Image: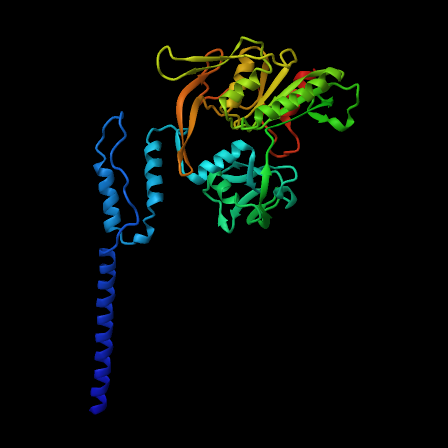
Length: 426
C-alpha cells in the first residue's frame, strides 16, 4: 500500500510539473509577443505635395495588424514588406515594363548595361519550359567547365529549376567572383543529368563584334564554309550587336572604323549583315546613333509620343554614316526587342535593309530609369515609339521580309545567317 501511494505521488508530481510547464510556456510566449515592439519607425505618412490625395488608412491598418497579430514576428521583415507593397502598387498599373527594382535587381540591371557582371558567362533561354544554354561565352568559366549550347539546366545548387523563370535562374546562378555554383546539366543528346561545379568570375561582355570574310557558298548557301573560301570568293561584312549599353557607342565606332577600312580594301564585298538576334535593347539614344550609320542625313529614325497631343518628337539622322550605300540584311528573332527593333524598323522603312529571321519581340514603349536611393530604382513607361512609317510594334513585333527558323537540332548550323549570306551573294 505504501509503495502504491509513493507511485501515485510521483505521477501527480509529473502531471503538476507538466501542467505548470505548459501554463508557464504559453503565458511566457503570450507575454513576449504582447510586449513585442516592431523594429521599424514610420518616418512619414503624409503624401508628397502636388499629388492626388488618397486615403491610405487601409494600408497602414493592415500594416499595423500584421505587426500586432501575426504569430511569428521573426517573419515580419519590414523592408521586404515595404518593397512588396511598392512592387504591388507599380504592378497594378498593368504595364510589364513599368517596374520597381529593389536594390539587388536594380544592381543586376545596371551591371547588364555596363557589360560587366559576376557569373559563369553563359547566355540562357527557355525551351519547352526548360532552362537551356543558348551559348557559353568564349573563354568563360562555363565554357571551361564543359557547358555547351543546347544543355538543359535542371537544378542550381540542388534546387530544381522546374517552374523557374529565366530571371530567377539568372539571379541564382550569378554571385560573387570566386564563389562556386553547382549546376545539374543534361547535355544535348543525353538523358541523365550530371553535376557541374563552376567558379564564378568577372564576365565582360562586348556589345559589338564583327568581321569581313570571304565565304564559300554552295547549294544556295545552305552550307557556308569560310575555311574553303579564298581571296577571290565573295566577301561578307558581319556585325553582331548584342545590346545597347553603356559602352556600345564607343565599341561600335571602334569596330566600324576597322571594318570600313577592310571593306574599302577587300574585293567582292557583297554586303553587310547586322545581327540583332537576342538583343534585348537598351538606350534609345544608342539606337538612333547606330541607325544613323546606315541611313542618309535628315531621314527619320523613330518618333515618340507621350500621350499629350502635339507633344510628339521625331529623331532624325544627325551624322554622316559610314554604311549608307552598302546592301544590308538585318537578322532578327523573338529575342530582338526595344532598341534593336527601332534600328531594324528604321532601316527597313527607309529602304536600307531587308529583315530575315523570326518575328521580333514587340516592345514599342520607352522607359525612364531613375534611382530612388538605398540602391533601389524604378522604370516608368513615359512614351511609345513608332517606326518612320508610323508602325507601333508593341505586342506584334516586326515581321521579317524572309521568315526562317533557326535549326535547333544543330546549333552549329546557323540557317538564318546562311540565308542572309545567300540573299547578298546571289
